[in-house]
Length: 201
Image (cartoon, rainbow, N blue to C red; front, side, top):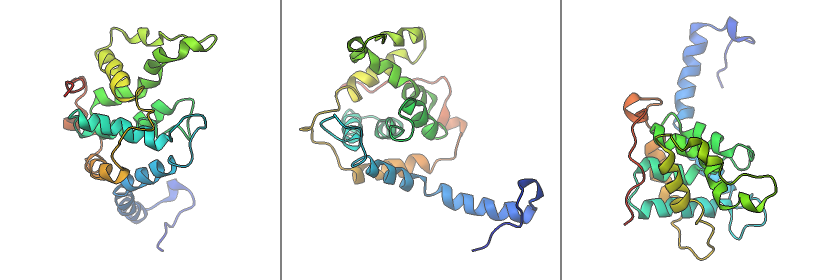
């Protein structure tokens, strides 16, 4: 395998970096596949105590979004919203948001980045010293209601062992479409644009 000529980046040549850029393009093209592999791991590497795996939780979330007629951005977001649970359990929401930020609109990224705080409304009153109303700090934010709706419709209710979710393979094309987009393209990010969740079907 061809490798660079340097041991310090500042000594790299134009040829080195042209070669690396070619390899990077090939590597970027496999992002969706690496995400699928990580999701598969969540099928057997999950936090104990729940009646379903983290993978099944994500599949239920994505299936509910798909059933509601959500677009690719939301379907991928629901599928990946907890992908950081294994590596970043204390800030899994922010990790997930950073993975998808270059490829989906700002509204979706913001909701995923803050969904952990918004979820606290359902359980924090059971834990000593926890504030279930932490989401109130964002009450004036343009995406506040979307985050409330996301948690209510596509997250807090996705722990049902009897729910008939779509298999992971069903969502592979959604991941491929989203992660094959040009990163940070203004027409994709659409900063400040909001559509909310689709109406209930």
